Image (cartoon, rainbow, N blue to C red; front, side):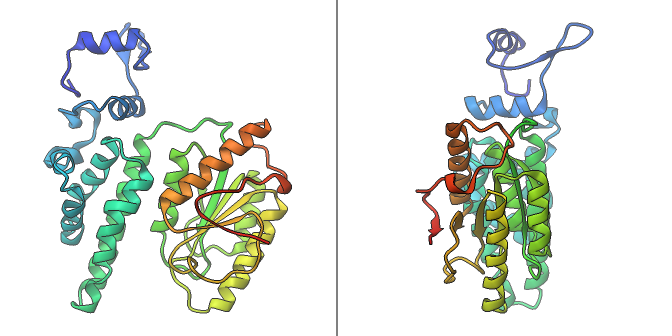
Length: 306
């Protein structure tokens, strides 16, 4: 069995409603992958045969690496060596160990990528290693997304991207995945996105939250002007704007009500949950846009005030 328990135990959990299963035409119980993952995470079950769930990346030892507390170091070694299978397995194992996506991004992934990002100072191959590791992390995040429960059609919408001159697509994918886990229907527009196009997409989606990642900045004045234009557009549709990335965190920005600057994926998750709670408290229909004067405040992240 996948989790090392008897078939009778699984049947009992289904009958008790602890585990959701559908009945096949032949009367057998069928458990969706995302439901199996949810149950494993919620109950801290030991995953004995991950390959039976199609998670073959976990069969080479990543689960034991994570549970012994060596997950961060193991992921760094695997990414630097270009071991895609083990790296994907380690990221997925962190998620299966009941860690939030935000904490996995802020912890082992961030730690590993920061160290790998310094290799170019000491080795001509450092940039190639970093690019390879980035693509592996992107693949790992997509794999995690495939195991997450589907978001209801009436969930609030979130739309986001990286900036028009930003080469980095990994941070905006991280943000999208965090928001998916927070219960948003996410639309990740990737990198190279003009702010006018981002606002248009958010308007069309009736987004409750818009995120914008700035990993690099070459011209601070131009970047600030673009962010101000974005903030004005997001404000006009009654959504909350969340800014993140090394290129924006700590930068002096003009007054922009309803805009939040976050320094981590965990802070993004906190803002996202607060926006959902505020909308629920106002009794708005799911998917409707919030009036600008009712945007929530008091988040842990920095708020750019008037």
